[in-house]
Image 1 (cartoon, rainbow, N blue to C red):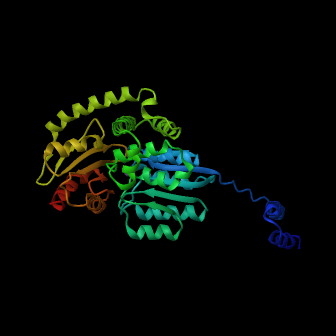
Image 2: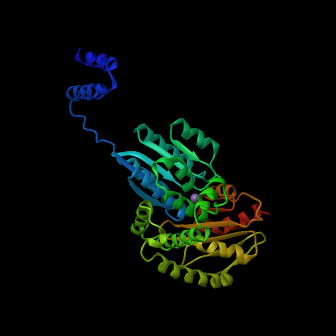
Image 3: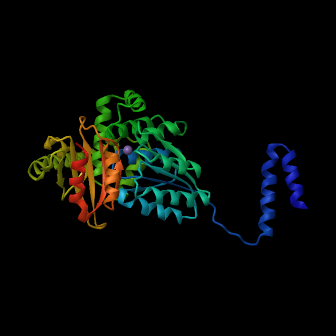
Length: 364
Ligand SMILES: [Mn+2]
């Protein structure tokens, strides 16, 4: 009886009293249903790509706009992190940034999203990698907020979507991401870059990238970068970034010699196993120095029993490497995908040679 009365009152009275009647209703239900102490969902988490400036910048923009904590992952660790956050009973809203899906991972991704949505977690997926239209449909259906466009980098998409919650400096963070994702000539990316001096933006983006690439094994440092960027620090104002970049360029210059010696070629591509650096740092040299339109660099991830593979295409490469690699990697029991001229894959160790010979056949 009392319950019914409260409801009628709240419908007829002004909005200002609505709040009090609502809490009254809550209290009544609380006392009638004995001890249903569910933890309140208050946490904001952003899972973002840790290997490049786009992922780190996206995490920084989400942090500035919504607060919360970042979890930085690479592709081999992507699903593990998602499966972890399902268990977090305090999770209220989840952002997933710059982490593309592949034929191998997309079904599990939809399953995880479905569970999160059933738990009333708000999920926003921000990305610009090639995606299966059926996955978009499935995610829309369960009301995952999709901010997806292959024409701009993830940080630019995040900046555009949440501009009203961001400060002026955020456009610089997004512009740096656009530069390092080769997307600074895109409609929005180019407008953002235009705000700043081009050379200043280029050196900032590059130094930031070298600090990200060189600290892949130090999660705390990467999280610190996210924080500093969220607090609107320029890369040069973060201590020791230029000194660290100096060390990285020195390493890269040595990589040029190593690639010259170790690189092999097939008809349509150059390839090389990398032992003491990241594959993504070497792959452009492999492509460039091989004189081919496609370069492949791969590095063993002993902890996962796989090779992390980076693939790059030149301007003359006419095929969509991301799509080809997605299908090929999946058929070999791995996963992969990405953009038309820049993509990556995770390949089971014994299948790497097959991956390269098959890729060579598929790109003529
Ligand atoms: Mn990206």
